[in-house]
Length: 121
Image (cartoon, rainbow, N blue to C red):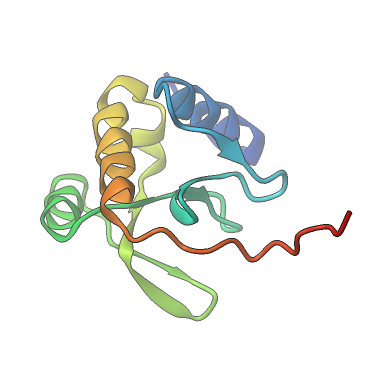
């Protein structure tokens, strides 16, 4: 399989990945992401790559294994997120383990309150 090039090809692969997890829910239209209790744990960046939130040990392991780095978005290094190489994005079965680790990490984080304004009845 060739490395995905277009944003739409990459998003199709991202959709395939999160669909493998029974509790993952894709959100966002222009910037697809997954979150749990208000904590985002994966997202597809504006620069067309997948970012996964991983705990420190897993982050280090991922960076070494795939020769990648932390995510740089919005002018800052996002210290808990790793950049998923496009070559790995197409290997759904291999990436699945890391995605599940990302979900599991999100379950350990303190829930964030919703920022949505509740409608008055």
